[in-house]
Image 1 (cartoon, rainbow, N blue to C red):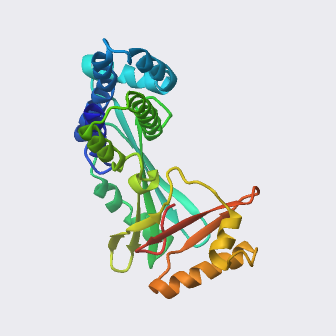
Image 2 (cartoon, rainbow, N blue to C red):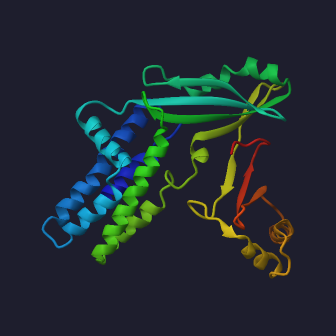
Image 3 (cartoon, rainbow, N blue to C red):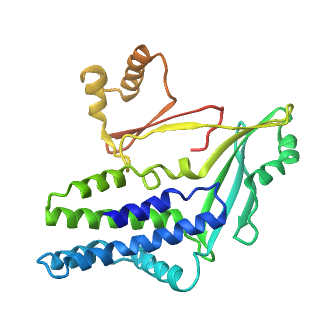
Length: 293
């Protein structure tokens, strides 16, 4: 549990705005500590009745292409070279009718520059688009150099597999351990693998052309489940109108009228209704007009 926590703690410090030296260091530490989880657990259980259970769950949850890649990266960063990180930045401008990918730049440790330099260089392009104000987003993506799959997807997959493995072993051993429980709570509160990708790696801006001023937007999204779970549409009827009204949009409006009476404020919300009579909400808000979802 401590090694799992240490691995995620390193990854928690990985941020789009950090320089390459810091982010590479965080990744190297993450892969090393991630691999040490099974090393230490195997040693702890080697001479107990649980070693067969350990192997069973390891085969079930950790024998796959993603986890093999994690092992390979751990060996590489310890014995050969630091993680070969690549960053892609895409600037997308939003008009009233469409979006336009204006700039796409790729960086490595050799040619990285401050993000503010990219923003400053956009002034002429943005003024030509709209002389008053322009809304745009900056999306950051990270890769292993030479690979096409985003690093984020691989990291989330590997973390989820390890969580399943550790949870299964802990449940099978069924030992009371206050320290393990405390560490598990800390692990479950980590942000990197729970917060949606766009919240971690997309920033929204507005450029006031007349004042020559860039403003970075802030935003919020409401998520009830991770991953999001669809809810039967009948549940909305029972909650909003006691089952008397079956029209989803009517109940959607009624529910928000009640919410507005209670708190005098509403977040913009999309309700998505699926063919299998389930639905989900997507609620969000931002400090500027345009937000990148």
